[in-house]
Length: 277
Ligand SMILES: *[C@@H]1O[C@H](CO)[C@@H](O)[C@H](O)[C@H]1NC(C)=O
Ligand SMILES: *[C@@H]1O[C@H](CO)[C@@H](O)[C@H](O)[C@H]1NC(C)=O
Ligand SMILES: *[C@@H]1O[C@H](CO)[C@@H](O)[C@H](O)[C@H]1NC(C)=O
Image (cartoon, rainbow, N blue to C red; front, side, top):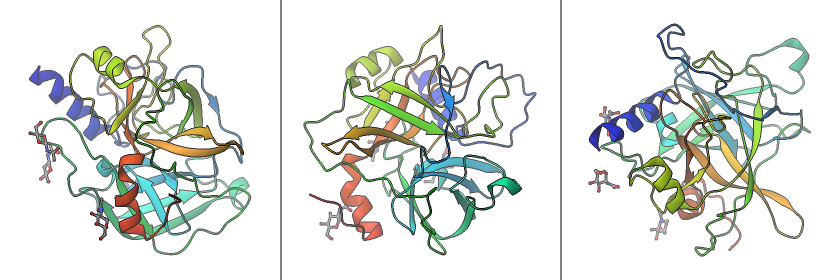
């Protein structure tokens, strides 16, 4: 179904769009980090980043270290100026957030050399190196990544998605507040069957949508982190990066993520961050 592919690709391209015309006839309801989600508390997602590209576009990201932000390739390729906000749960600066809000420019931005936009999106992963380091406060901290265990698909795991993506009927504008929703990671085969095409690769993972109660990522959420609680100490680890969902109906179909574990080497090679084996 070539049209389906095109639709998906368009949604990918547009999924980090911010400043599109609101009255373009794109009807949405209850979109964004949609569904039974909530506004995030102040220290709930201290690894969340808001990435602005060339002033007019926005994506999510996550803090890997004081100098490196993990995001999606679609949030990097084609853009030249990046500004990263961490620390605040507000998308736009306000005086009350002055002690939390940190906005930092970029030194360089990298996207995966095999990022493929010819048909289906694959290798949708990117990195932004900050021009000065993040100051660690009660509102900022890095998110650990899982160690590579190829047999662990995380299928059936409870997971949490957070982001500043659009919410409500105003489908192109960012949510003014960071939002989150709790979900369960899908089996890849089930995701492919639900989406009705073969675009889901082993390097993807999905969370379910719902026609009745739309739930999932939307415009502006690309690059945002999907986390699980892992280990005896029950620490959060990032397992996915928001990549795409189907256009015009965020949350009614599965949200598709870039899986983090296949790219641990790639991340290490570019950032110098050494992950535990
Ligand atoms: C695909 O990527 C190439 C660069 O690799 C770019 O020139 C082209 O515009 C992209 N196509 C779409 C549809 O985004
Ligand atoms: C990119 O997509 C095309 C079309 O689906 C496919 O033939 C090609 O192998 C893909 N390349 C990579 C590096 O995944
Ligand atoms: C990472 O670097 C090592 C050592 O140079 C190399 O063997 C490996 O292929 C690289 N992996 C990736 C994914 O870039």
